Structure formats: C-alpha cells, structure tokens
Image (cartoon, rainbow, N blue to C red; front, side, top):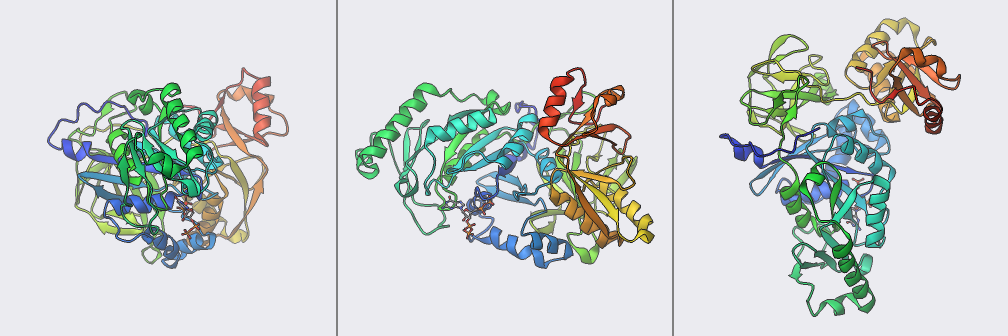
Length: 533
Ligand code: G4P
C-alpha cells in the first residue's frame, strides 16, 4: 500500500492497538524458504506449536473442495492466506503471497494491503526472477523491505557478492545489520554490526524452538579457533569493509524503498530469526495514513471506519458456494454487525458474518482494528477495490490495474452455452480473475500475470457456469495502454491492438525487446502501464 511515513499522530485512545500492529508480506522466489520462515515466525508468536504445521496445511488443503483440487493438482497455493499472530505485545498480520512459478494479479494486489515486506533470498542463489517482479511492485508502491538471506547453513555466495547482487539487480542500497560468519559446514553464526554482538550458531535438530545462541563480541578470543584462520581473516575483512564502505541506515530512505537492511541466517535451523523479528518490529511501520483520491487523508486514528476490498476468493467452501471478500481496515474499529456504506453500490450493508483467518482456517470475529484483514462472506456483493465506510463518503483507489504479461484466446467448446459463457466472462473479469479484451477476432482474449490465472478462470467457467472452453495461448509477452488513440497507426503488424472493457486501446507486443525498440523509435508515443485516466 502506498503509505505515508508519518507515524507521529497515533495519539488517541487506541494508540497501542495501532502502533503495535504490523501488516506485512514475505516476498520470495519459490524455494527460498518462505514457508519455512513463516513457520518459524508463527512458532515465535506461539501461534503454532510444532514446526511443520504450515507445510502440513499446505499439503492437506487439496482435500477440502474442488477448488482446492486445482491447487492440489498443481501442487501450489492459489489462495492468498492471511495469518494473524502475536509476538510480545505486538499483533502481526502476515499476508501470504503465492511463491509458485505461476502467480497472479492477486499476488500483486495483496502487496497493496501491507505496510512492509520481508524479502527472503537463498544465500546460494541471490536475487531470482520472482524476487525481481515482487520487488518492483514494492518499490513502485514504496513498501519498505527488510532482506533476509537464508540457508546460510548451506554453502552460500560470498557476503559482498550477495550484497552487490542485490544492489546491481534491484537497484536498492544494502545496509547489512548482521554479517554471516562463514557458510555451509563452516557457518559459525552471525555478527550484529550495530550492537557488536556475535551470535554463535549451534546446530540443533531442525525446527527446535529458539535455537541456543551463544552471544559474545568481536573480541571473543575463541573466535579465531572456531572459525579457522582463513574464514576468520575473511570475516574480519568483511566487517571492516562493511564499516568503511556501506552507508549508515536512514529510516526515511528505508521507508522510500531506497535502502534495505540485510540480515543473514537460516530459517531451516531457526537461526537468526529472532534477530530478524526484533529488527523487523523496530523498523517496519505500523498502519499508516493514506491519501484519498480527493487529497484528504485517511488516518488509522480516525474514528470513522474505512476499509477496502483487495481480494475476492470464490469457492473456498464449495458446499456453500461462498465467496470471501478480503478487506483491509484503514481506520476505525470494526464491530460485528455494524452498518457500512459501500459507495460503488450506493447502499448500506450490514457486516454480519465477518471471519478472521489463520491460513485456511476461519473463525468468526467480533472486533478488528486498522491494519487487520477481515473476510466478509457475501456472494457477488463486493468488487475488488470497493471501499467500505462509515461517516463521510470518501473515495480511495489503492488498486492499480497491472499490464498483463500473458495472453490467450478463449474458445467456447459447446456453443449452446454461449449465454452462460458471456455471463461467466463478465462476472469473473469483474472479480479480477483475469482481464478481458476484445479484438477483431471472434473469441475474447484474456490477459493476466501468469498462466495460473487462466487455469483458475477456465476451471471456474466450467465449474460455476457450465461453460467448457479451450484456452489457446497467444504469443505476446507484454502490453501497454496508449495515451493517445491517434497513435495506433504507428504500431506494426506484429503488435496486436485490442480493447479493454472500457474500450481503451491496448497494444500487445510479441517481445519485450520489440516494445523497447518501439519506444526507441517513437519516443512521442506514450505507453502506459495502467489505463489512461
Ligand atoms: P518456499 O516456501 O519459499 O517455496 O520454500 P520452503 O520454505 O518450502 O523451502 C524450500 C526448501 O528449502 C525446503 O526443503 C526447506 O526445508 C529448505 N530450507 C528452507 N530454509 C532452509 C535453511 O535455512 N537451510 C536449509 N538447509 N534448508 C532450508 P524441501 O526439501 O523442499 O522440503 P522439506 O522436505 O524440508 O519440507
């Protein structure tokens, strides 16, 4: 979520409720260790008692419904789940973003509902493709990022190679808060540069809660012995290089996603997680005020209730054919049964069946506060981006449309179902499952961020509307809206011009290279990532 970094005016009765809340996501390329880190964070918060529960849930999910069957077949997590847990006197809302190869606009939208993110990298791999995409969204929305370099108990790249990799690929300045002492079998722990403490790694059975850490300083006489001459020399060089060359930490630059604190550790062996969690709680902003469309502010301390729908989830429970709207609270206190106004519908709605989440588990809630995510069960009522409010009606549009990167033609198999087919396309695109475009060809074109969106769309068209269809991939890999309609003649026959549902022209390019060379040849044509206003 685009946030203001002013956290000074949290001074009403509920200050503690707000200042002690953190709403965040973990962004990662698949396999970097997101599930493992989530599990360890939940263990610290006492939300689960045994390591392995998150994973166990992940594996079990497929048995719950047909919707889940799709997840199981693909071995992935389609749902963005939300987990609320406490740590000390903090309440943490962790919004999960699917890390599979195929991800969707839901992943992006979820990032609009958080105030910070933990970016987890595999120490042997550094920055990977999915990391880049998720990072770019965070950077664009100015979501502060804390970096955790994981799997240091396995052979990893050199410390400065990893820091350079982050800086060069992502263009963000690294400020290491801790440095690793070796890696793999030579991993001896981490050094907290700012507090001059060494946290020695002692391997325990994986998953042990609160790994024993022996804490000492850089002058620890045992250090050279444990590390060995060569690693010790390298480590001392790293420390002095970090001290001399790396910038000081600056909170404003962190809030502007210009710099990232970097910590090292091993989620698998539960080492360095407590350091990460403590730094995270110190640095990550609590719920922030946001700027409404008319320039006014919505502050978490405002008395009026304001919230927005960032995700719709259908068929979580097929027996009830229900649909859950995931709602992020911006201000005010939510109370079960309260009446809110939904400006798009121009009507009041009673919020009578709110649920909170813990992964796939739900329970009914009575109260929720700014920063929290609640689920509202109400078929077809809400749309993504809907505002729910009490008091003065205010417009806030936090959810941008993302330029699709995958496209396909949608072909109805049984033409007698064309009415249901059209209805399904309309309703599912309204729900944000895919974006729909029309062109000179008869079949509609669907666009999304990844193939997963098409699979979900096809599944739901068949399952809910009885309209079986074929999805034929189209060979375009990026798209842009055009600022000025008169420019469309400049595009060549390789680029396809289609219309979005608001009749705006959108150009589909076969390759990113083709788009870049078009921009070079025609600097006067303005290509937009989002529909023209
Ligand atoms: P993801 O959600 O980002 O996709 O990653 P996940 O946590 O599932 O971790 C991917 C693999 O990496 C898992 O192994 C996990 O155990 C391992 N892993 C995560 N953190 C660490 C770490 O700090 N050190 C080491 N050595 N391994 C780590 P797997 O074999 O795929 O699964 P499992 O059999 O361990 O469950």
